[in-house]
Length: 69
Image (cartoon, rainbow, N blue to C red; front, side, top):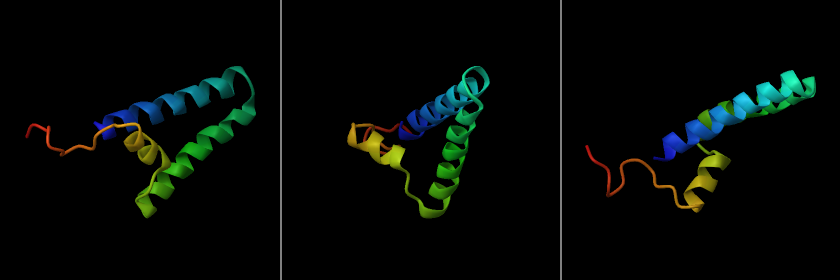
């Protein structure tokens, strides 16, 4: 479930930043760059702030006791 929430939130943030860049101000492109750099950083460090926040608000990781496989 965590992976699903993560992908939806990050995808929404990317689309929002692109829309803000197009309709509001070109400097919003830096928000898109920030998201990309954050994703690359998390691939190397295995740590992501969004994942930490989602876990603290109660989103369960995949493979828990209630998973069906």
